[in-house]
Length: 140
Image (spheres, rainbow, N blue to C red):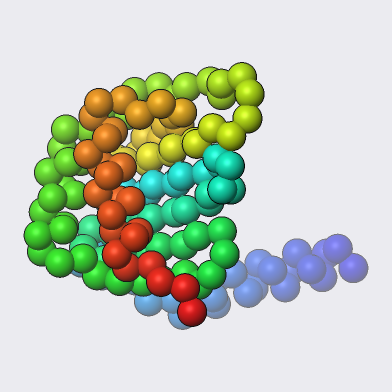
């Protein structure tokens, strides 16, 4: 039985590989993630997520409600990119003692860090992403 599975799998893999069309380079970069932001915790139980893509669009989600896809205005995109240029992620912070703390996570240029207090370079980025969440995410 095992040999039959192996033979079938070996025959199936090349057939599947040949039918998959290559993705154009432009399409791959258009949907590449520019920055990912998460805000979690607190008394209100936040679980907000913003994913901004290289093409100027965003995907927004909260603990409850729908996932929303939207595209930023040119001004919003330029402001976010300017704030990201000054961003220094640094190292993640250890969770503080106690409860009801907000946890902020940013992923940018292949690096990810989690903080409980916002460093100076994080504040403009987090403020812009929070404003984007407020403006574009609306429950059903």
